[in-house]
Length: 141
Image (cartoon, rainbow, N blue to C red):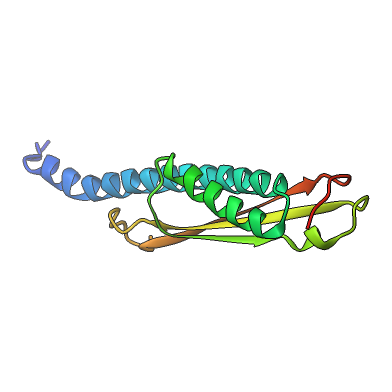
């Protein structure tokens, strides 16, 4: 019966296990940051659509939606490299009594460059679209 020397096996285990653990932690952070950003962008698009739907004119709706989206994202812990707000206020031209909606799409280019996880891009686009009804019986221009 021969006794095998097991010195050095802990360093081999660490060499193999540590990179896998670091990659796993990086993926958890990536998933969490992406999830938080997605919720923030959904909230911003809902806030923007609601703000646009209570405006009287399509010009005011576009201005109010831009402000609401930027303010909503600024109040949350999301670092966007670029924020794009696309407003469809074309239903403001519909006559009173006809159903109409305003739609807002908010896009956030999320900065992920600090993660340095292989296979993860440095940025990711998070997008959300929300529609809100216009009051059918209120005057609009």
